[in-house]
Length: 537
Image 1 (cartoon, rainbow, N blue to C red):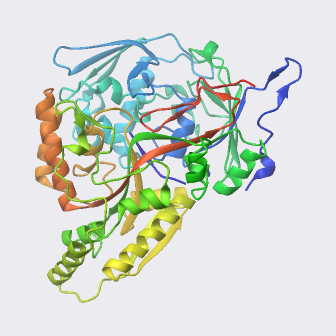
Image 2 (cartoon, rainbow, N blue to C red):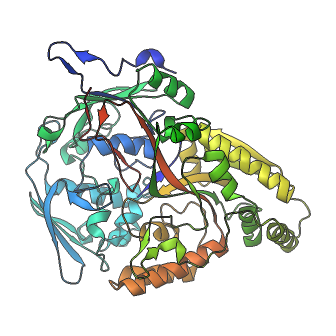
Image 3 (cartoon, rainbow, N blue to C red):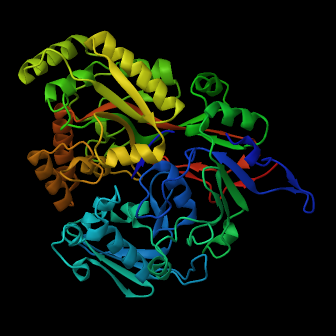
């Protein structure tokens, strides 16, 4: 799972569809603007907390598994794995592979990085370190209550990684596809603390390697000949110019300076027409766009006021009239397409709804009045909605701002920030309302429900509920899907009634490719995978 923050340097981009005169074939170069629309915050797996950085990291690193289009785990660095009967111990057998600098990739690199993620000195640096809490003594180690040697990940030898879990987790092979579980070259990290800041010092084990990192301009990847499956990688380069304007990116696509656009680069006002014309593909993904509230910041320390603001939003109007690219109004935190294997339905269709696609204006007004009365106030304090700078985020914020003004007679200020600044603001919980998209890598609701346990890295709302935490303990301690699903439905009902978040719509990933671009894969988890793409005129 990962966080999904929807986000000019034309002269820096080379022509995208030229030919190699010597070979008589098109150059295998992909010129992409998708989620990398500005300088990545980091390319160290420890510090990657946003989808833009993750898009690059996905192509320069390789975990134990890669998740396919449907979210199923396929062999990556691990050529095979096996689980114990109780689903609490997993053993991964690694293939022979090298880092981009020629060092051998070993099980020790995985053990080192996972413990680095969990190290007390790194607490708070990664939004996703809590994902490793399923490992025996992982959370205790991060809290300073256990030693590194107590953590249940161990390299038995260079080629064998053994993982012991706190509780049964049949989904664990899928979980390790997340970049929180990527390895690093232990030798490199120990010898150079700044290893991940420049292309010249960066070392990865993925299908591509960093060729250029011109800060605030572009990133260029080139094929990694040391990648274990390099013979199947056809692209020679991938260029990511940092273009924050979708209008600019679209014009460059039309002039053949770019040959692939993703969701972060297609003008929202053109999406409906381009979709109808068949020029844009909209892929439903396991994701939800939400506004989250800091429950320690007035007035959102009151549950009724939080719910009032949520009910005042007309989600259907946003998805069908503003966005118009296949999204659906969200009435739950767990997104569409996420299965409930017990009920044989989508998970959100089973949870008892609190919200509706259309605004609940009268309920919202009543709740606001009651909440203000409980707080002993006649006027709300100044309220600011923060968002990461992008055309899409801005348009959504402006539309919701008007809905709150119309229904609640409340003026809300809007404030956009660049990605690095915005992420820092969320991490420090220095906000009142903030936008966020959350996407699951694989098909289990636990990826979403686990986000809001007390003190989870992804829980930047300050919200805490003992019954919710107890239900999540049940989910994590049972391999029985009936017990797990029942507990997760109850937990989501608590979350939706307590309302630290306002689900807005279920996500799609849009794409627009030149006809010469083949085999770019958009997974159900929203990852755009260029690994085995190629150019064919």
